[in-house]
Length: 123
Image 1 (cartoon, rainbow, N blue to C red):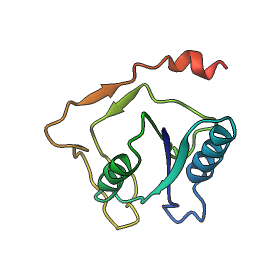
Image 2: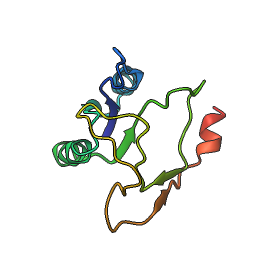
Image 3: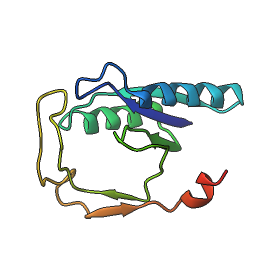
Image 4: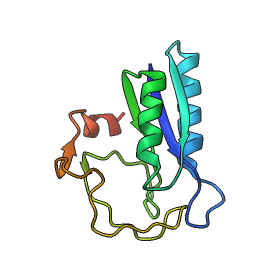
């Protein structure tokens, strides 16, 4: 089972393409015979982790692909490092704007992907 997530619009935007991409990718995967589902996460720092944990419990995925919007980037990018640090440029949809806070207290400072990301971007 593959779980793909996108986020609701935020920062005054009417649309967040991460959701449409997650939905489209899940549909293509299902059409190819894979078991895949897309889900929407709220754009609120305090709520999104609990929502994701609930989705993990609900679906029990083997693979999770979390999509997001990096405003200003000109193309798709894959992140090699997930940093355990929040420094919000603008408030989230609940009005929170954490500065210099860990995503998960007591966790490592960063998590590195073991996937062949550069090779994946070449295909």
